[in-house]
Image (cartoon, rainbow, N blue to C red; front, side, top):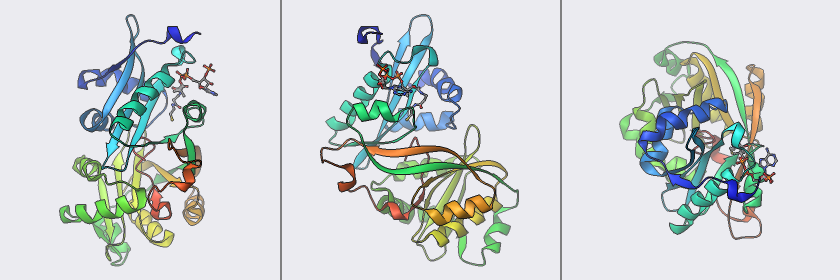
Length: 292
Ligand SMILES: CC(C)(COP(=O)(O)OP(=O)(O)OC[C@H]1O[C@@H](n2cnc3c(N)ncnc32)[C@H](O)[C@@H]1OP(=O)(O)O)[C@@H](O)C(=O)NCCC(=O)NCCS
């Protein structure tokens, strides 16, 4: 169809939340209303509306402390695809972030990647979602089982965790970690030597583990073992491809690879790999493809 068939992009508000959530649910995604709220409260969500069908497409952008912004929730109702909606909403997000001097970064699904490539995004590195089952236990027992190497997250740990996360991820997002920590049934632990931490929060389909930040994969595995021992049911874990030890550990625990993602950035340098986006070797699991 011609680009003239693309519905105009508008800015969404909290009143649109009930219409936005079904789009991510229909795509089989894991975001909850609380995740959508983060974009409405701290970033901007654009959408396209049809008079009869209501909200048929969305894209969201989230500025992260000075360095770059994240783009996500790029969703187009199946009946409305290939009419330029994703491209037009992406352009709105890119414009919003570039006005603030921030290059846009995102985690692309295989379906989204061709759209972003056409808009000038370049791949940084690959991630994959691991899906597994956790057994129930109490967090206190799990921490004890980690024999002193791990302890529960305290309020006073937020500043240090924000700094660790910023060094690994490339941008500070303390407001996001604080948002996760306020949620019901969140699980949060730190390495006792202060060199890493891990969070887990309920998602729509499964508990989303992440971010997990540590110096070494063996430390991350210790955090993951402790978290898993305090969780019950299905869990998702979005791991950078480079973290081969975590991949092997997860496979031995019966996790399966569910889907790949590609972290991409729209930058002016010839190859995005030349640009600096944190120290990905320390990013053991992302906060989820919507937040990076
Ligand atoms: C990915 C998605 C958002 C694309 O939405 P869309 O409105 O159809 O995209 P556009 O019309 O703007 O596409 C622009 C161009 O990108 C390319 N493109 C879009 N979808 C594609 C696909 N599935 N495979 C290959 N190329 C694709 C095409 O070149 C397309 O041009 P065309 O329509 O002339 O073929 C939509 O398919 C979707 O919601 N998928 C499920 C959720 C998802 O994966 N979102 C991306 C998250 S990162």
